[in-house]
Image 1: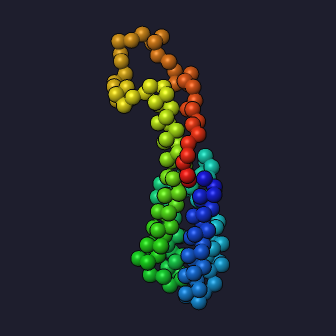
Image 2 (image 1 turned 180 degrees about the vertical axis):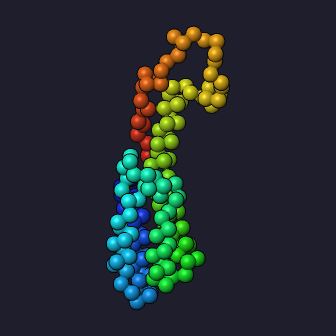
Image 3 (image 1 turned 90 degrees about the horizontal axis):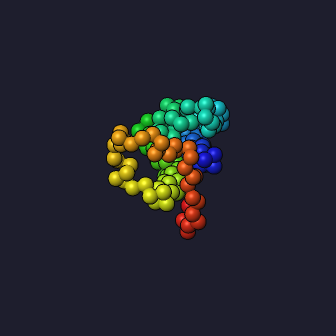
Length: 147
């Protein structure tokens, strides 16, 4: 995850450097501002990084391009393209493999769509239920996926 986030940051920085060259301005102070944002650090207590993943981008992403004389609509397109690239990397490297593993685990456990969508049976004694925590972890299958 950290590598994907670092790639996002590097891509954004390179575009800001290019915009600085076009505007004949030094973008270094703007890059320092951008690098100081908390959204670049993933942790369980840092909600700004989760907001970034969910598409709530800091306004500063666009404002810095505007400060370098890039029109706001163009800045929005550049930032949107960078963010979409980030989301695609998340999907292909993290989300899809985890979803695939979960699907295989459900198959092994014989968990069907019908079972998942059936209301909880109310007429069975509690002793017939198995707590989720007692289930085995998902099996890790070796596949020929290419990230």
